[in-house]
Length: 94
Image (cartoon, rainbow, N blue to C red):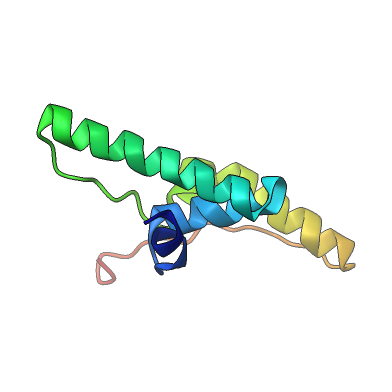
């Protein structure tokens, strides 16, 4: 089940797997995903809740400044400069 979750596109567990596999290795990442699945299943069954999928962009939404620092660091390593300007929402776009 953990391997299937790691291969499924656009879910939180896939992103978590790849983040862990880069640091800890594939086998340890699979075990961590198994643990996450067991924890989620236990909470769903014990509390009679629906499963809430966090989405593949959970880490980006949680720490946007960390993502911007990482992008800036990569661009600087390539010899580029990066400037972040906020996108202003218009009434017609919403």
